[in-house]
Amino acid sequence: METVELCIDEEREIRTDQYGFQQPAGSGSASPREQVSDYGSVLRRRAIKWRKLLQSSRVERSLKMKRYIRKGIPNEYRTLIWMTVSGAQAQMEKNPAYYKKLLEMEEDPRLVDAVKTDINRTFPDNVHFRRTANPSLQDALFNILVAYGNHNKIIGYCQGMNFIAGYLLIVTKDEEKSFWLLDTLIAKVVPDFYTPTMSGLKTDQEVLSQLVKMKVPAVAALMEKHNVMWTMVVGRWFICLFIDILPVETVLRIWDCLFYEGSKITFRVALTLIKYHQASILEANNFPAVCEKFKEITRGALAQDCHVFMQKIFTEPGRLPLATITKLREYSRAEIDAQT
Image 1 (cartoon, rainbow, N blue to C red):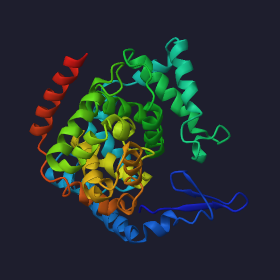
Image 2 (image 1 turned 180 degrees about the vertical axis):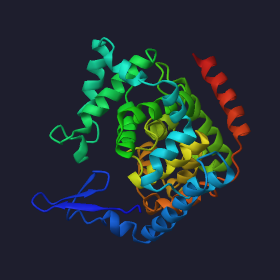
Image 3 (image 1 turned 180 degrees about the horizontal axis):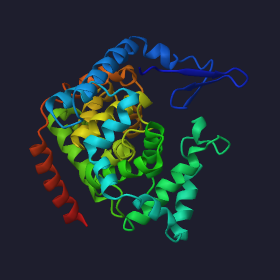
Image 4 (image 1 turned 90 degrees about the vertical axis):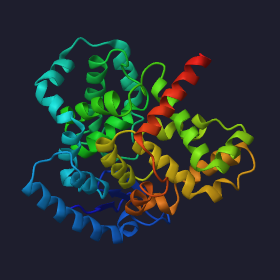
């Protein structure tokens, strides 16, 4: 059964959720348990249904599996489902001992230095990533990122990958599985996001701008009026796949769908945040105000309630066929290439 646990270090007055993230006591905000009191009953019902599903059938892609994933994967099954539906499990089984071989390769000093630089900046508010933790997830995170750099020398290491790999570690608690899930994300789900040119990231930001013109034209006009580039307000949303942008539970629910349905989920999330908060965004009357509004909409009540939020992403943006996204990507890529 999945529950939101809250540990309190009375001496230091630090609240810690089940993932290890801290929330100072007396901050005035509701505890994770209080925020998701109704969600707890949802989790219990979902856990029972998932247990029955997995006892009666194999993990295979199907409309039923898609429906279950959209409603949320209990934590105890998350690693299994992510690994299976994404293809990461199959890749790991095809390449036994490959991860170990990557770690045994001769060190690339530039790769190691780049990874070490970001390790200490990864989730400083998470007790499991402290250097003093026993065990410290910093060690496992270092291994994953160095292994990936050895695996994909074109990318090596790119900022943002530390947060992605860190979240994977929190869920899987397994280095090798986290490595293969990271590889799946970078190679299949968001290709070319982390390449030297970041062409995939630039393309998808432009695709979002086109989708906003189609579905929330007033916001698109506001952005143009105040000369706000989309990369200024959604760049971190995409490169970190909403980590440190939205609450942990919400991010994990998004990733449940991302591993199954692919990158169009990122557009659904972004469009939902923009469309649902359109009235608030339109109150902005200058460049700084627009940027601040885009920060505010990720901290609102909608984002805090992950169950309602995930229902909204499949209704608020309306139809979003993959064919439309594919065409917009082709158009956007051509536009970007013409400018370089």
